[in-house]
Length: 446
Ligand SMILES: OCc1cccc(Br)n1
Image 1 (spheres, rainbow, N blue to C red):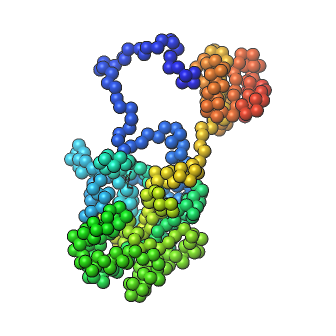
Image 2 (tube, protein in one colour):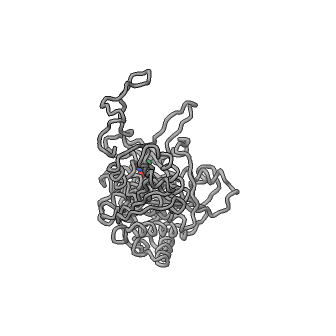
Image 3 (spheres, rainbow, N blue to C red):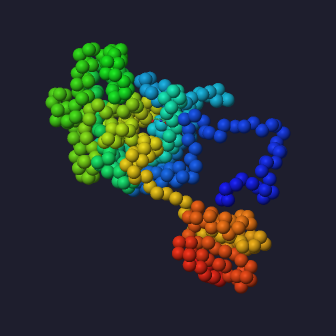
């Protein structure tokens, strides 16, 4: 409390006996493993971050949507060996339904698009900010929940959609003070992989599995990658060639290796040309090793990375033209990205550009005598009806306590309701930054 001790009005140190029948059972006051509380300071930072997510989404004409955190497990059961499936936070509910806490937002978005069907004219530009979950063995001490900003464009087959999405993330970075010297985007296309696999007449249904293995290139030893690729049926030669292609960092080289302009190179050339027009060329680079860890991507994929290489991917996304049809919907082209709330905060801390966010209250209103508490409430209401924020002192407290609280909540003005002034229909006002003090008629208080 403001005066530092925890005594109630009675001043007795010991707490009154519990009124409940059952004995007091001391609970763990920490949140469940892998989850976070958001006390005021953390909540201000989260609100600032989400405000910027929403502002940028609005700048791009996107509409906000949301879905239940709890979804049918079937939405996330894919057979490509993704980490996201191994860590699914799933269970059987009391109705014996297999359900899961969503590990990502895209499948829910796809479900809603299909549900809406023809009633929503394409293209759709939807965004969401939602909590996503995974059940990871705590051995790695990583979080089990995070908030993701997603933006998705449904119904646009052209690369202009991916270019627009990357532009929106660049706009977001610039708004929060992150520059092209701090972060970049590695961009590639899964069609590169497709073209290589076709050269070795490796069947399309291996495509998802191969992508998931390749996505682990920087996370597990190379010989394990090779072993996994062979285990899904790739020959030694195919594996070597694929890894060679994936190490390419130039589009010209890629075109040579792939033996001429295919869809992958054409898409990527168009993306880089659009990046020029959007003005974010310095933010992106081609990197054939980017495949992303979600099986449903079918074309351009990209991920935001910190140029110092200290952090995990900041965000990622790509084209997923087949997802809606795998859910029984029409064959509608789509692309989108996910942007987590944790790595970006680590980056801002690294760069020393966390925003200064403090509680700001315009007024603290205090009754100088116990019997003026009602008058103080009247004053608070007058100010609040004018749109002014008021911290109303709710108990009879010494002025020293009031000044201490005013400083803690960054109040701009102290409004004192005292007998003498109140009899004249006035209140005392003290501007806390300058110390200036004056009396004002209640009906002139603004
Ligand atoms: O980025 C993968 C992911 C999904 C759900 C929760 C968390 Br934490 N992380």
